[in-house]
Length: 190
Image (cartoon, rainbow, N blue to C red):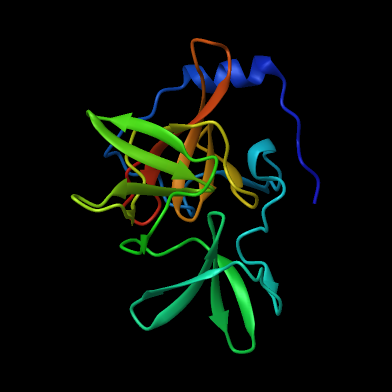
C-alpha cells in the first residue's frame, strides 16, 4: 500500500470544516463515499498493524484477562489468541492494564484526564494504580493514528476512520496537524 502526502493547503482546508455532533451522515447508498486505506503515521510506524497475525509474540508480554480471553500485552500492543496464532487487536472497552505504555499522551476533556496511546484511550481507575480502556471521548485531539485507518470522503468532508471512530484533521495553533474525534460509526454521531 502507498501512503499519501497531503499539502498544507489541503490540511488547512480540512481544518476549516467543523463537525456537527449528533447529526447522522447520509447512508452509503445515498451519499458519495471515496475510500482509501492509509497505512503510516510517524509515531506508530514501528508498531504491528491492527489485524496482523503472528505465531510468535514478544517474550515480555503480560497476560491480561478480560472476560474469558487472555490478551497478551506489551508496550501498548494487545495480542488476542486465535487458534495457534495471535492477532494484534485494539483492546476491548473495560479492560484494565497495570501501567500506561511508554509514549502515552495526556488529553483533558471537560476537566477529566484521558490517556492515549496507539488508538486506545484510558482513564485512571479511581483509588488504584491501574488504567481502564474507555471509548474515545468526543473532541479528543491526537497527533497520530495507528496504521490501517481508512480515509474517506463523505459528502465533501474528509474523515479518518479507525475501529469505527471518525476523526477529522485540524490545524492546531502551533501549526501542527491533530486528529479530532468527531463521531462513532456505530452510533452515527458525525
